[in-house]
Image 1: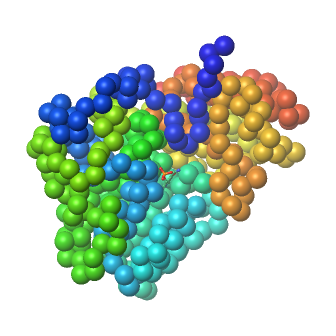
Image 2: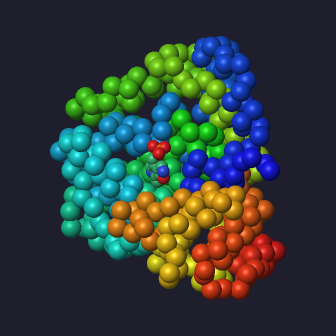
Length: 388
Ligand code: PMP
């Protein structure tokens, strides 16, 4: 027995052996030359991975929620109104966060599994004056992918700042941060960026930084205040040490390895590979008769799939899949939590992982009494994997 299970939840994900090895190197000082070089490289590479040339990169010790917090606390001011293009749980979270800072959030909601189109967002922006538009690239509770390019285009046309939560997308799902007009692209280390949990990352556009420099109200979050971090990030970009809060040294070493692996693969190749694996996985689950939570094909995320349990099957399926050696996640969206499960396919996941996962799902379905012919899902996925 291998003694470990294949981790196919939507984060944390499987990490490469080199990334994990970097975590276990002896910890250096955070101002050691070697570390300054490493952190500086990370910040530079991050701009290439995020496709955010000329943006300010920040890497803080904390989870993705801290990156959301940093974006909201630094760019928005009390009394401002913001439109949240809500596609699930994480739209609600950032809305609650904004309310905490005295920012008024208004949600453009859609039925579960759907999201407003760019045209619908444009319509909302015509009637009201908003300071910013906030959206989730891939909402991890629904596996719905937003039209980041289209929504940001109409938001910029309306003079709004754009904040995109990329936690379940960055490094796997395409986001051309600068050319698509994304002012803040924020994420966490543990998903398609391929580094264990514990880093909050974000890039801020020149226009976003202008909003920060011009703000009248003080930033109501001490730890995340850009004034504390800008001198630190600027120093590391010059390969010099600086201090505000101790960086997560070993995680930064791991991030350096992962970003190099991502750039070595190439961003377009990486986006294509994620689409290819996602397409094969869903060819398999379609053949098994499993229905996706996203209501149409163009909303399906390349990093994650959310599937309703078929008739007569309940959430026990998740533990049955685990018994077959693969960890998948149960539901997250409160309104349908007991009716669906989620499978992450991103970062270092391979074609073999897709096949292993489908095989485990087939065995678990079979043991749950589901009526299908064994191998159907696997065959459909294999066929898809063999096409270019
Ligand atoms: N946004 C999205 C889309 C997420 O998937 C998550 C994590 N699942 C978060 C934000 C919050 O990140 P974290 O759990 O690292 O705080």
